[in-house]
Image (cartoon, rainbow, N blue to C red; front, side, top):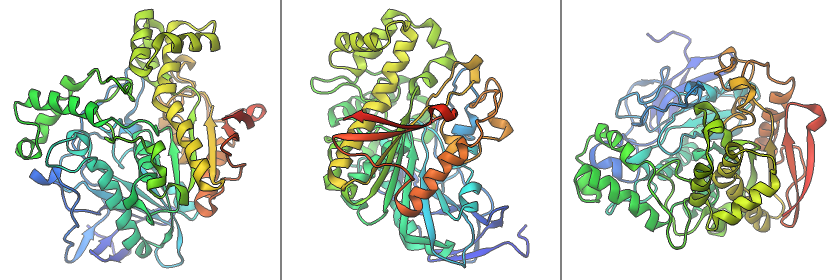
Length: 491
């Protein structure tokens, strides 16, 4: 039941009722596009028809169809959220604002991760309270995933999940002023798959003018599948479903069947004569493009926006430590992942071994995954952006080591998120099987990281030296004061 003092916002599509929070107001399940049903699941997002009366924005929306994810001993529910919550209208945003009537505040739009197959803005990690507290209007976005979002099909536009994010940004442009935000000061930030999508926006001509700044957290500027690679996934999916590989044939198939065939798509060999597997076999879905985003920045708004970009120092450990893979990895396992990720795996492994002469196979495998999935593409995008942006590129390296799983998780993929959202003190993130481990978060690290993101959204400068194309500074973010600082590198 609505309460008398619940806030109501008038938007172009209709009125929305929210709730008052500790810091400002929160509006949930606000649609930015029409519900993607039937054949519409394989079409570009359509405008929402609007509504009469006051829409209830006090409860979360359904989520995109998605499988459950198991990360072994590590509790990743705060990252993935509740999984699939069925319902047609899931192309929605949540808005957490300091207030709707007293100023044009900076806007930050977050795009969640999940390997292009899972995740939603309902995940507990994406709590916007600290952003609202600090004067930011935070928008978190749901988008299509898996087969509806990213399978390349004849008769359907490519990269429909990315088209959803673009539609959400147009909604922000047209609507965010009603929530107290400044449509001329928008920062898009994403993590993992969401970061790869954010990087793709930098190369998308249709994204010009929709945002001023971007943050790419542990993404991959070279993570797109070539059309040839994408067609291998499409052919396998069509065979598993027993239909032709067209949007028309897929339109009548229920989402449950799409989820049921995902195991048949796992582990496909996507190497071709001209390309390695950019995701090293971890996901059968990604962007599809003949040009990698890092190489196409001149086609989109890349040169006109400020960029904060970086990775964690031990990204690959997330994919091994929780499942016991760090200890069980054999030389054959190591060679297999290097073969997926590198054109010359033997030479690549020789370089990894030279850099880590005492590392066992599991540690080397984690290093290969981290480099292939995140670090190499991040470096290439940072260098490309620095060349065309006039010195508006900032690079970070997050090195705080989680003590989870007997201290072995380390500075793995996703560990920076509680610090970005300034929730690292939450009890549900601490414990041996939880993301940050049993140890308390380092004093001041969340304030440092979250503060840098806030400063960047406000001014385009996170408070550090920018990156130059030939010689640059990488800001190291760690929990140890002795290790904080800047590292000079050669590009």
